[in-house]
Length: 416
Image (cartoon, rainbow, N blue to C red):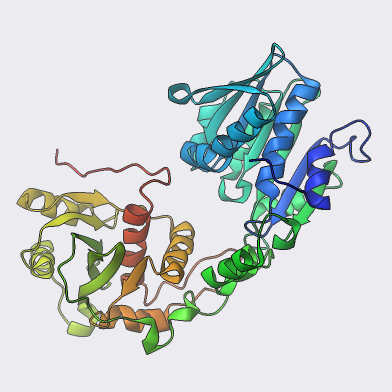
């Protein structure tokens, strides 16, 4: 549904390319700021309207971190809006593009996912008349620069949209700080720039984030992470008793170590909420004795306690332990998604929304929540590599179970 009204900033995004706009000489637009601030909606609508204003029979790119996020965040709402405006939309899901047509003029919009460094090869060789990069700060620089190089048609323009990150992030340094020299229009959004967002919804979003994520996603600031990674987990009230009923599903997540501690968490699903109901935590330094893969496997089996565990999610670097689990043939084993900052952000949101709960039986996890902190000495976000083993296994669970629909691949480890 087309919004009943637009803010002044949204209207500027919608019209900056028009010949009557004072911004029409710009060759790019950059929008950053808070979540739910209305920048994605206005950017995507404006992108398509500009494409038809300037071109016919041309190809364009729509990029996000994954193909799935392109469809979910941009294409699905965009198609509904365009149809309401009288456009005809024909999507080819298997080929990752949508054809949009108006009065016999048709343009094609290809989807691209910039998940990692290898993604740059996916867009190589294309010739595009313009490109929209959503979540630009989450994509590797190599992918973004390869995507921009594809816009070689005369009159092509560039569209960037993102939430803030670390102040030393390459996108901020190379594009936001240099917007004038790159002939780009830069607009910063807050939640107040979205007239469709109610006061109650603004308050709800303010409760979902804390620390650096609050300053970035709610206040819209490019800031360095500091202090506790999960500051809202600093009291006994943040933890729960184990539910008395039987869980409908069970999963185990594992951070494996030989010299460093090993932390395994047993998760149960109760009424749509995942509880970390028990744990196995072994610190070889504290115990004065290292355990073998087989001994850790015995700990894993003891943690499962005869329950029907649907999968065991394991630190992807723990190749020998993965093979040990596979060799026994009792559990399905999955390699974890180990993107640290993305995983921390998702875990923070899951905890804040109550989608996951940590039980008081998990004493090691409770201790680590109190000690897990950001490393403030570097030029980019990363947590201190201490007191992070239960934190890692919790992160593996969130990114591989709660976020299976977020463009990830479900990969099962198999033996050779």
